[in-house]
Image 1 (cartoon, rainbow, N blue to C red):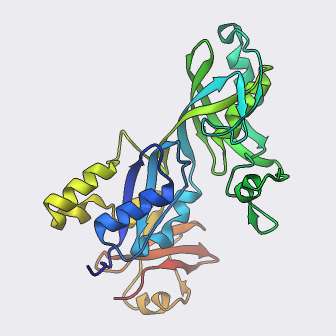
Image 2 (cartoon, rainbow, N blue to C red):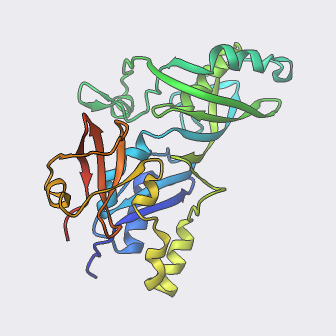
Length: 302
C-alpha cells in the first residue's frame, strides 16, 4: 500500500512496556504516513504524552523537545538499580527510614527546587566519545557522565507510603526523573529508584486541555473509517500557539519563502513568530532581529 504525504502532530499516550520508537512506528503504520518521528523520548517503562510528528511537522519538533515537561512518578525506596528504574539490575540495598517523619518540604526546597546539578543515569541516550551511554553500560563499562544543570520549577508530594513516595514534577528539558528518584533516596540516607513514570504534559499540552490518543483508538479509527484518521492530528501552527502571529505581505512572501530575510516596519519585539501569507495560510517560523524578519523553518512549497 502506498504511503501518504501527511503532516501534523499526534499527541499519543505511550503505553507501558513499549519503546517510543515502537510507538511511533505503530502510529506511522496506522496512518500510512511516509515520514514520522517522535519528540521527547519516554523510557519503555514510562507512559504519557509522546508527540508524534508526521511529514513537515518534524521541522518544528524542537519546540516540543525544548519545552518544559510535567511528570508524575512513584519512587521506591530501599533499593537502587543500575538504570535507576524498575527495569534495572539491583546494585544496592539500604534500610528505609520512617518516610512520614521526614521534613519533605525542607528537603524539596533546599535540594530539589530551582537550578540544580544532576548526573544522568548510565543507561541513557547521552553520547560519550561518540557512543551512547547505554551501549557502554550494556557492554559492562561504567561511563563517566558529567553533571548537568537542570531546572525544577515545582516538586509536589502527592502521597507518602511505607516504602514509596509519589511526586509531581514540573521541570526543564534534560531532566531525568530516574536520576531525581535516585538522588531523593540519597538525600534521606537510603537508596531508591523510579518505579512508575507518567508524563502529564509537554509544551502546555496535557490530559486536561488536549486530546491525547491511545494507540488502540487510532487503530480502531483506521479499521472503521480511515477517512477520519487525519482528524486525530493537530495542525502544525496550532502546536506553536506560544509564538505570536505575523502576516507577510504578498510583495514580500516570495523573498522570505526563498530563504531571504525581509524588512519589517512594525514595532515588533526581537523574538520568533508564526508566519502566514495574506490568505491566512501558515508557512513557517521566523525571527525578528534588527528590524528584519529572518526565516527559521519553512514548510515546503507545494
